[in-house]
Image 1 (cartoon, rainbow, N blue to C red):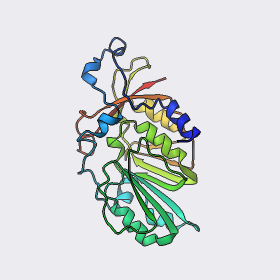
Image 2: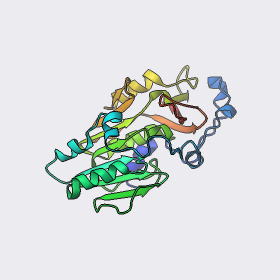
Image 3: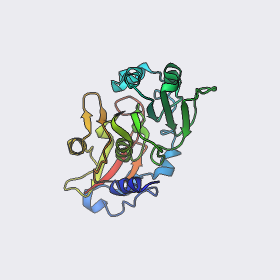
Length: 257
């Protein structure tokens, strides 16, 4: 992991060990025992995170429908070899389609925690990685980075968003489904009570050069940028119940400086 990656994770308060919330009850009126926040290791063992129902077998049309991105049109518009990274790629059916359509004009990487990929055989330009998107890092920049409904099951959602923005080429595009209501603050801000971060988070995203589409619940960024949100990840709750998709999802808790 490089120096830039370490700096980003420090700014975002990334943790692999969870967070002791025993000092938050007096400040917020919340009982930390009710929260039962999970660290990354525990969360990734959760049956909610290993969900096989949430659009995991999607194909290329889903990216236009869910993210407003025509993957093939965007990648074909370049006059050089292009690189596409799909985080939480599921079975990677769409990546196989794109690899066959684009041939040696594209390098495509899919990352998924479960690793239940379609195939073989795999086209030469396609690489599939079984890993957590909160810890995996690429070795080169990408022209397109997508995440279709994957952030719903990630603990440090803001950390993944920030890291993805830093992996873009100068004119690259990042697009992901993201619901600001899945992020809660529990201390460090006057009146923080574990309610959805809402407008405070939306303002922070936009102040850092990220676009947030509240109607479609999408976050995006054009061009590489180091993001400094100053929201420190505390842990996640996998018992929050269904989100706007109707599927059970993960709520993430942050301290806000």
